Amino acid sequence: MAKQNIKDPGAHHNSSGALIRRFLPYLAKHKAVLFLDLFCAALTTLCDIFLPKIMSTITNSAMGVGITLTAGIVLKLAAVYFVLRIIDGAAQYFMSGIGHIMGVHIETDMRRDAFDHLLRLDHTYYNNTKVGQIMGRITNDLFDVTEFAHHCPEEFFIAGIKILASFLILCQASVPLTLAVFACVPLMGVVSVKLNQRLRARFRQQRVQIGEPCFLAHGVVRLHDKDAAFAEKAVLTGQQGKGLF
Image (cartoon, rainbow, N blue to C red; front, side, top):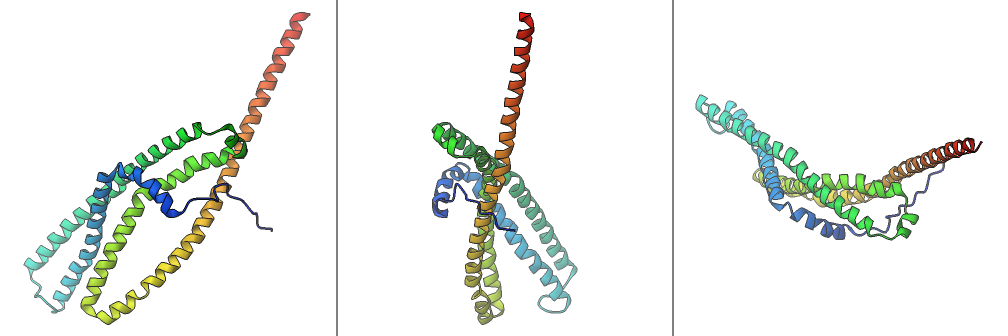
């Protein structure tokens, strides 16, 4: 089966840096929520790092390594573990709830601006652009922006904290081995960038394919409206003809 060549009408897109600069003003309106979201992300990351250390401390103490395991130490570590779990749960709740609400507000602002821009466009734009493509840009693309609005800062911030914390923890064990492990990080970054470029190309192709059914459905609706109008006109003509006789 021959591969279908689908052209993306938005193929001449701006660079990622230009798009991010256009996106930052929308994010700046909710910077207070964003800072709280990043703070909660930092709390969850620190909890994920400290909780295994607590279990490691209890295990080493039980095996006679390090401090002597007593009932008081176990209760103190259990209390710390319980408090960290509460903090982690509250931070996760804020990130999942308030973070998504912030993304929805950003999507609303961008959708309003996009609709205002569409109203100012000339009629030739709508003659040369399929309605399904416009619908896909306003609905599917802005939904991806909603997810990007809070997940992307969170993920980059969490990744930075984990890389720094893991580097410090591993250096306590062996500095040469730590450097050898982290020497693979640039290679992983290059591979991620290459795969991300291929993924973005697939996403652009998918947006075009999603727009085609929307365009066909719009054509069917218009054809149905024309048939209904023609049938109504025929009925009225017939009634007028009967009235003459």
